[in-house]
Amino acid sequence: MIAGISIYEILTLTSILFFIGIYGFITRKNLISILISIELILNASAINFVVINKYLYPEVLQGVFFSIFIIAVAAAETALAVAIIINLYRQISSVEVKDTEIMKY
Amino acid sequence: MDFNSFIILRQEILLLAITLGLVVGEIFIPKNKKRYIVHLALFLFGIHTIVGFCNIEESSLFGGMFRTNNMIHLFKNILNVGVFVLLLQSADWIQEKVIGQNKGTEFFILMFSSLLGMYFMISSGDFLMFFIGLELSTLPVAALVALETSKRISSEAGVKFILSAGLATGVSLFGISLLYAATGSIYYNDVMTTLTSNNLTLLGSILFFSGLAFKISLVPFHFWTADVYEGAPISTASYLSVISKGAAVFILMILLFTVLKPLMHIWQTIIYVIAVATMFIGNLFALRQQNMKRFLAFSSIAQAGFILLGLISGTQLGTATIVYFVLIYIFSNLAAFGVVQAISLQTGKENRDDYNGLYRTNPNLSLVMMLALFSLAGIPPVAGFFGKFFLFAAAASKGYYFLVFLAVVNVTISLYYYLLVIRAMFIRKSEDPIPFFKSKIYMRLGLIIAVIGILVLGLYSPLYDYIFELSTIFNK
Image 1 (cartoon, one colour):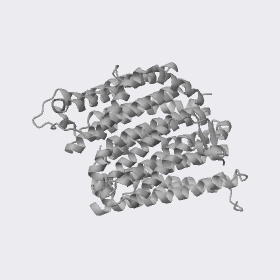
Image 2 (cartoon, chains in turn purple, blue):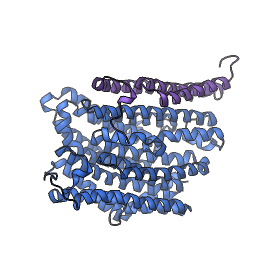
Image 3 (tube, one colour):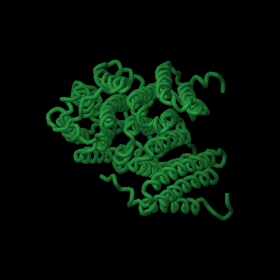
Image 4 (cartoon, chains in turn brown, red):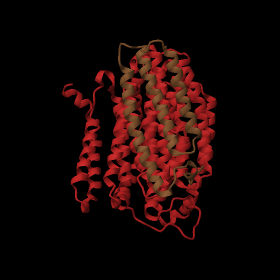
């Protein structure tokens, strides 16, 4: 627990992070930026788990363990996404969303 | 941790052993003998499928994180049989196209890892195990979608899949964190007892639901489906549409019927709206598709809409019909994808117009395709009719008559586009039809098993009774 900071401030922060991530995912035009937006969403959830555990239910460490797994899985997911994006880049020399629309509707 | 816990985890351990065995095989089998790895993998997975039918007692492990009972065990067997048929159908493709690029073993390793993730997902007892299972089942599939690294369309599909999956996971996790905030636990049993209906739990469960809705490709989350199916190799598209969707439907059903039961009056409204939207959008978009893979993608979206009719009832009848329908749907869709794969492998053609006059040159394949499409459309003698009938009965038993009416309208629309394919095969003439060819033994075996499933499952009523008997577990 951090002195002088209540759970409301931190949950506000994580909610803002979450919606920045959603907004970024929808509006960004670059595949790597979209990936960064996903990371923001995942990190917002990880912070949420730790904070809720620490402030509301400090007796059991369920939330902390959950956030550790989130970090590990997020790393795996990012690695795979970057690998697939690099493979696409080798073929079209671009990571822009507008170049990945040969399949539509 | 004694010996008994290994018996409960038997299926998971066996599948992991097979996966690791294949990794070792990839290292030690010399390059000119790599083609035998297909036979090895099929043999090992066949043994795994048969061993899976041995009985497992109802029990839980790791403080309730992992649990199993007869219903979960039955569903694992259904998934096993589905994957086995799928592997039979894709064996020729792997031998001809994938082994040459030295990626044959990867295909099996990735597919088995994904299946292992689904095992953990459907027998999860808390949200942590659920989350890990979900990710373990999603990430290898993303690699499978982008398996054909030399094709641009495959990479594009891979990018679309992994980014959408990442968003769905993130949103779902945020929802779980809100549920955790409201109830103070991530175990299903604790959440079930302390969950009350308020704004926080409502927001949490909706965000959580959207993560699973992505996997089932329900309507606001369906945009990835057609593109990914078109770009991915046909085996992967088939896997995504039957196995992955089936497992996600099953766990969604467990969660809605047990953990989120206190919010039942709210999620029933949500599912009502989503079911109507899913059926209409899936069917109407399927009308204008030329590519068979895109066509089957939208057809599978529409089928997901029908599955929601069983989900909305929330009763024992609902549980039984969902499992029964998923079982039938797996066989029907596998037969349809199998025919598309056989033709694509021989000729490289995937459009509906290419199927013109198929009956004159390849009568057997046309008959298999016709049975599969009749089953998907729900025409009486084949199994699909019984699956749909029970789903509609489950929804009607709770008084959702208008929803059932809309579903029947949709069945009619879907009949139109399924018949378009049948017309192309049987009635239309073509100057340049697909020439006669004979598939190899594995493909034929896979198609035969699927056809037997389509014909027998609907008429063999003890099976439905058995499923109905087991389904009391989730409706106490």
